[in-house]
Image (cartoon, rainbow, N blue to C red; front, side, top):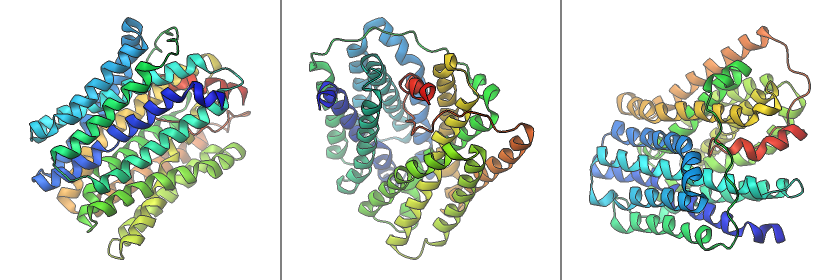
Length: 407
């Protein structure tokens, strides 16, 4: 209980930030459809979010070193608030893409500050519990953000103002906390090629994860509208995706720690292809079938990032954990930047099923590459433990470095 109290301000900021910024993507997609934006324009907004996210991941450690944790957090949160509240002042898809870059910058920068603070304050005795609560709060905020969509009016001042207020509210717990700011660690070097050098399959796996997750989160509401879902049922559709991905993490982790992770990753990608087929097949079978398909899709795709990073860390050294995590996060962002635009263009050109056909092809490529890599070298000996890894910042690796080493 004392642990929870000591980190209460940080965890409350995480939840409010997720609630405020996590709702913007689906609200933008639904609002864009109502305002007559093309599907490609809506996809561009999703890609812009991840471009801002990448910039924030790179810049945040440097800004923290210059002005401190609290001021950096305030600056990034202010950028997110501006990015949300200005939507109904400039109703234009190009302008909204620029505003979404600010939202992505906010998410990456604020999480970098929070994770740097946690890393500096946790001890060996409290690390496991603190990280467990952190992941629960983050996931709970993400789930709540999807459900909020069901009660917000698209393209309305009130809706965007409400999300902006939640972003502003995230400032209070951090800024009024009496906890002393930690010392700033050096920013990790960004060496994207390190991931490929250690594990080509792990590197490709995180790219595929970025492509899959970003397409669903950013363009999923457009797909939902195309197959006949209403706004409140789109919220459940998106929430089912998150729930499916979270529920399967722990049994999948058990498998990944006991069997060759390449076999598990190939099996998971095969299941992802099956889930894409199921999603296409149930389009006309009612809302419940669509929700179940979304949960199945989340269960087969969301864990790929954690599984791929675990496989990559099996071949890494302890002194390069942070840089390897940053490299993997960079590759995830590359996939996420490209994916929403590609998925939205395919839906616009070939219909809603085209997005899941595209994702099936991506996972088929991962399976083929996995088979090639299995023939290239044998499985590694002692493995690092499977960890449900958040895709939040380049320095998240610091939080989990000790867990991997101790495993």
